Amino acid sequence: MGLFVVAGLLQLGACRSSSPQAKKETTRATLASALVATAPSAPVATAPMAPTAAAPKAPPAGGWVRLPPRPSVPLSASIRVFIDAAKQAQEDPAAERWLREALDEGKVTRLASPVPASVQRAAAALRTWAASGEAVSIGARSYGAFELMDAFNVAFALIVTVERSDAPMAAALLRFSQALRAPSNTTTAIAAGAGLAADLAAHVLQQRHQPVTEPFRTHAPTEQDALNLGRSSVTDSVELARLVTLEELQRGPLKHPAVLVPRDGTKDFEVARLEELSTAAGVAAAREAIGLPITGDWLADEFAHYRTFWDETEHLAATAKTAAEMASVLEARSRLALIHPTSTLVRLVGDVTLSNHESALVLHVAERARTYQALLAAAAAAK
Image (cartoon, rainbow, N blue to C red; front, side, top):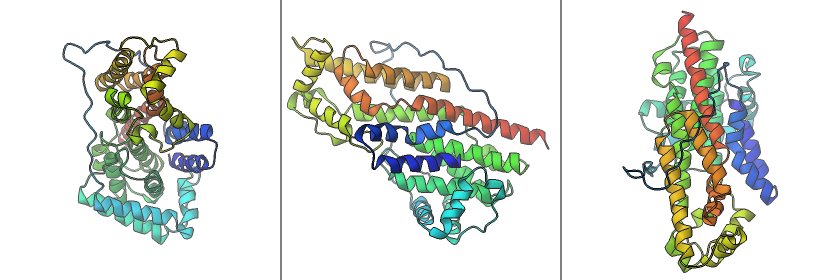
């Protein structure tokens, strides 16, 4: 899994100098495509895509099922110390080659050089955080992407320093992996947490033939993490989409810049186009372009369909029961947003706030959980 972090960094770097369209496609794919491309540590069967439940066109008898709001909790002081130490390790020329080799899965078992001092400081900071019992709260805009990538890089690299399943670093990495998978965290954090646990299990239990210790059971990833990832994705999407209100459309251009900047942090020509169309006149022109009427109270009708789309999307994500069902929901809603027949707002905003990669990421996280459970079972059977 270490390679996915390097690939993500390369893609993020490339998007800084590419064309607007390339930047949009690259940044949307940054972590998701790299995660999905990573081979699992052990062969597992991929769950088939489940049929999507039909979206209700009106509130169900019990009302729309809502997702819990994402809490705004600052990162604890101790985890910030680890993140800052990881950043310093990434910038340390003496540690650069060591980190690169540690993250190269083909060289993990051959790594012989001593752990650089800057990496040791980061490792000590991670163990201190693990002993604190504090959570890791990573919301959509709580910390810069590059700082988090540094932390993920170093955490994955530290796997190669673990020789025994009862080592303190094993317990610290497993607790970090579970903290990253908190339901309120971002999709990137949840996916990284699942991968970190699976890769550590592969290194310690499969390659080093170590026995299963309690932390490996306590902090085990499960299919619920994949469901949490899907719900986290939808939480971000609906939170941004609902900043668009009928009143603001009637007043003029949208006043919320957050709506106009995709979750990947870019602001390209597609977003500029959305800014131009985020007025009643702009929406009217867009409706005319696809043959929708602009007579009568058309704006209220347009917005009613827009609101229903996001209510449906949230309801389907909140009620999905398996990773396969969640992946199907995300894929179907992302596809429908681009061709929505009755709301140009859905098309415009959905194209910015919905990702077409996260359905595959949900399945990948479920696969990582199955890989982990298979490794635990194999290690237990080998006793």
